[in-house]
Image (tube, rainbow, N blue to C red; front, side, top):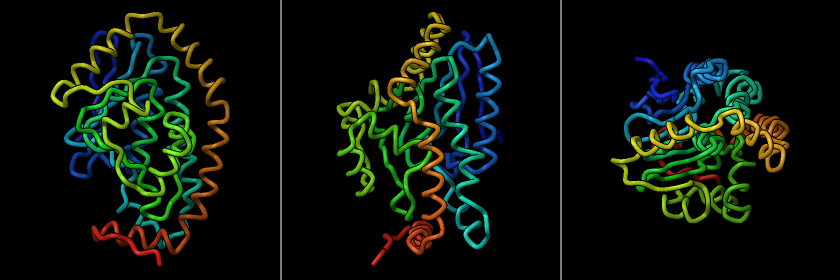
Length: 258
């Protein structure tokens, strides 16, 4: 089974996160395959827009927590992991000079949320649920979430969502500006594909230049923030709170940090 399923029609590349048994949680191979697909799309002039979605009932639940448990007893650096995986992925989504649309089905959390927020447009199913997720396992937001989420919904709302770890409903996500539009779940993919194909017919070079302008105006320090998130995550990843959070998550229990 391919971790990233790809299809191409009408100058639109559709990339589907395909790990449904894990709620499309990312392992290292899946992240690198998505990186590779985006790099290939960047070099292919036939690709004029990109659509990212998830198979099954989730867009992506973020990093595979069981993989985290496997490395906790090792000397693997969370900072170096981010430098290799999510940081270049988030930068590529922002820097690729083609429109990128996220079709958000079901749940999205953690690094999956960062990936969705880094896309240019977000079309969400009316039953989608957005969870920041990191603090529940004793980690700080990474994958650009610490910058992108406050930029979209404001610092106060972003802080509450992160500290409480409560899901944001699709209706609130629309009201707060996190997503561009909501559609019935059964219409999500068709609607998102229609938008992606419409954009593929437009002035894609101008769209790319516009992304540069928006990045400069709103996200000029994205690379710096990603690096700083990695430094903080290196500390958090070695904390007792993180060990408690991961253990409780895998047992499907509420963590106690007292």
